[in-house]
Amino acid sequence: MDKIKSFVEGVNSRSLSAFDVLFKLHYRELVYFSSIICGSVQDAEDIVHDVLIQLWESAYKFENHIALRSFLYTSTKNRTINFVKRHNKQLNDISFLDLRDNNESIIVAITDAEVLSLINLAITRLPSECAKVMKLILQGYSSAEIAVMLDLAQSTVRAQKRRGISLLRKYLPKEAFLFFITFF
Amino acid sequence: MTGFEKISESALRCFKRLMLGEEGAEDYEISDSERRIIEKYSDESSLNRELDIFNSIDYSKAYSKFLNAVRKSKRERRSKLFLRAAAGIAAAAVIAVALVIGGVFRYSGGVTIINKYAVGDSKRVLLITPDGETYSTSGDIKVEGQKVIAAKRDLLSKNETEPRVSKINELITPEGVRQKITLPDGSVVWLNAGSSLKFPSEFEDSARVVALSGEAFFDVTKSAKRFIVKIANADVRVYGTTFNISSYSNASVSNVSLYTGSVGLRSERGSLMLSPGFYAELNNINLTISEPKENFSDSPDWMRGRMEFFSQPLNKVFEVIGRWYNIDYELMNGAEDLEVTITISDKTSLEELIELFKMTQNISVLRNDKKLIIAKNR
Image 1 (tube, rainbow over the protein chains, first blue to last red):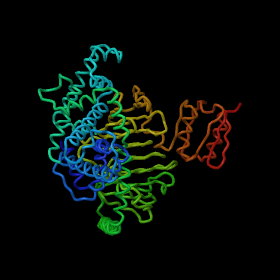
Image 2 (cartoon, chains in turn orange, cyan):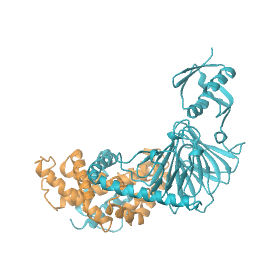
Image 3 (cartoon, rainbow over the protein chains, first blue to last red):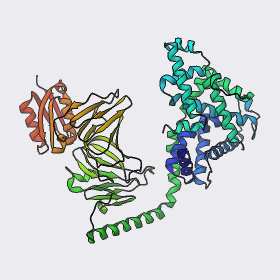
Image 4 (cartoon, rainbow over the protein chains, first blue to last red):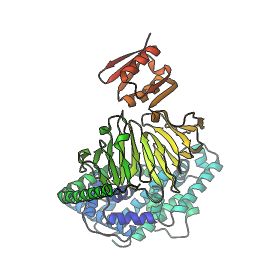
């Protein structure tokens, strides 16, 4: 918990090491979110770069981590929408044509980015055998099927599953973010 | 945008449902959009594709780009900052003079590097401070908190190339030079040639942590605060003791030899406690730690200005010789596998060493410029 607090304080005081952590933690999900809207990861990277430079040069201070993330997403959203307008981008994906402001699709896009970021975290941070099993569970396979696919005993699969679930339970309920930061 | 907390909770719900299935899901309603996200990531090919996209986003590259941009905008403020730093150094100098004149001399913490303890050309030993200043150690250097006390001529370069974000100093010995340094807790480290030691100006409250690449002999002061040496693939944990670590980045094996006290060695693959008079090897490739082996001297050879080799292949021997004499070498015609037993003193000149090898081993040694060519005789 204190780590999160000192991270946010570091961002507030514009410390470079806190920004290093900020890039590690949030850069990819912001880019992914922006790319859902603008349709290009490359453009999204430029957009998020501008967002973070703007933050660095500003005097904004954040009360907590939620406030910081809320700012990052809002700011990314605004810049992305401006970018799309300015470049008059043709969006292929029909579901995003109604994108203007705080509508449902933006909320879904943010949720989507957050979920993907969590999945990536879980898969990269769980012990590797455990992560393999959890990834297959994620895809809806049963213990029996996983046992065959990974050439393991069913009891081993069940044990890894229990282990994965208890590890995830331990870290996730409070704040998902803790899951990552405890591994620093 | 309001309600980010709601979004975050919603993401967590999707994630739990995905990862933990029915077992992990508490009784809550899933909205339509949440269901869509869950379906998206339940599909194997779609999951893998999106994970690939996510991981192809290079955050460290993005951070470097960010640093560059920040540096440019900082440049305008630089001159002001420089004046302030100069004032700080002047103040430090006044304090140092006052200490000397007053005859007050007791161990006051801080880091000291005493020039006369260097073996070899000490001008080539470098100290890089957290501010990114680089000093050579042709004179004594003292670091106290943020302040570095050193002769002006020793300051080789200032920051400005790259803003550093750590509180870490780095002492670098080039090939052919050894240097001794006293750490903020009074512990003493002798750094062998071709090595680097990273250490903070002041230790944290929780533990004393330094990082070593290369070889060093440690004499650690006793304290309840754990002393940890980080090497490439492992941690060495100690309380107060003397020991030697050899962990060169180009060597396949690191080793830790204990002389007094006790240390623990911990890698990803296991851990072990060493008793005095024993050493252990760490295989840097598969991270396995050997059983402790007995060690018959009371300090490492290099500390006594000697290199001793007992039935060692010539490539291992030249790895060390190359570092001591600061010379490149090439082993040919199977010379690399020849086993030799030899003791070399640091008073032996390179010419004498070559003669010694020619006389005692079945090899020929050619010297051109900065390179030795060693070939097995046919």
